[in-house]
Image (tube, rainbow, N blue to C red; front, side, top):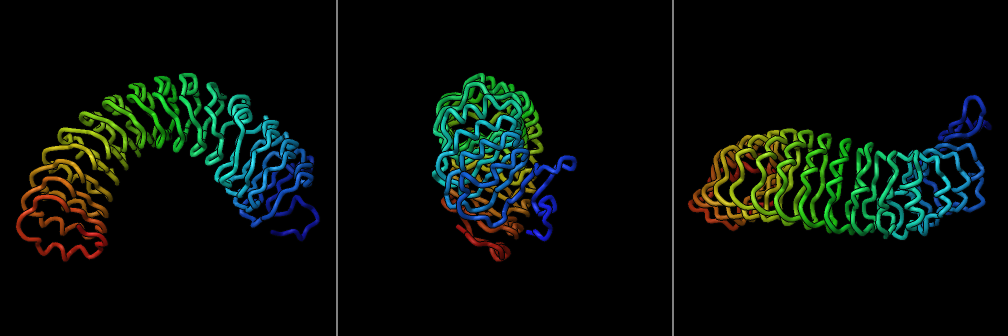
Length: 393
């Protein structure tokens, strides 16, 4: 950092108001700062400060000093990934002008009490961005939160309880990340009010029941993560309304029945995970329509019948998992069209006949599992073409 001038407004990371000369911005992110910030630090006397960024430093698991509450003109506060620890001071609730707050990814013992948490989400009417990822909050989520919120990241915060109807009355919300928590109960129908949402992550919780039909109202969504819960029943047909979606994760649940044909409408999708469920019947014909897909997981289900030739339409695919099902018949020759593929799992099925020579076209493949089937005949010379292979079963 350069300090050759005595005028602090010319220093790296310092921004001043051009008219008053007051310091209004301080960016010391990734500056190799270490040690402890003491309560009487002169930092807390910069009362005109609007933006403070101390992210990416090492404050030795020390607590954030209560003096942070003196900076009542702050609009943007970023203390992420700086190894803070202990309890976040209640004085942070004095910063009612905040527009963005990032306290994510600090020490394991970094804690926020329930009352302060509720104040941040409910009473900060200017707050648009809040990231508390991996802060230990260990409380229910407030029933009503500020409608100004646009980005909320509460991943891995030990949140618990149920999500109420009123929680989703957030017309401006674009990203909501609540994964890796302890939420229970069903997702309320009011989730359909999030009509501006681009990313929704409710994965790795304990949600039960069915996905509400109102999920089809999220027509702007690009990424939807509902995997690793306890959802049951059928996937609603309304899922086919999400035509802008790129990533859809529904794996590791208890879904039953057939995959709805409406998923064939999701022609922009890049990643689709339906693995580790209880789906039955054959793979629908629409799978061949998903020509932009890069990763497809249908493994560990109860699919039957043959793999359709249309699987060869997925020429952009990198990872395909059809393992641990009840597929029969021969592997179609069209599998050789998947020349970009890196990982292919067809193991633990009931395939018969010879392994098609067209697999020799998959020259980029790293992992190939054809084990635990009923193949006959010889392994052809195509094996010698797979020069990038790392794992072969």
